[in-house]
Image (cartoon, rainbow, N blue to C red; front, top):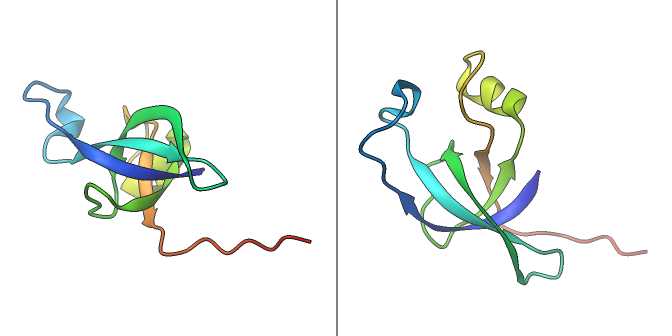
Length: 91
């Protein structure tokens, strides 16, 4: 899992039937120091996120299956939480 910022919705008029009625979002990872990372990807929205939101992203097909409640989903990246704060416990 990693923390990311939602950049924008992804609109696709022609898509696999699984994605009908499901929101896709472009997300960019946030590095440990809070700076934007280089990695961007498309994620299935599991929490009604929107542009500018900080979110927790799972990048694993099994996680998508568990959240959606369906086996063999054709997605492998899903937003699973809104991130309010990150509390570090430095030694």
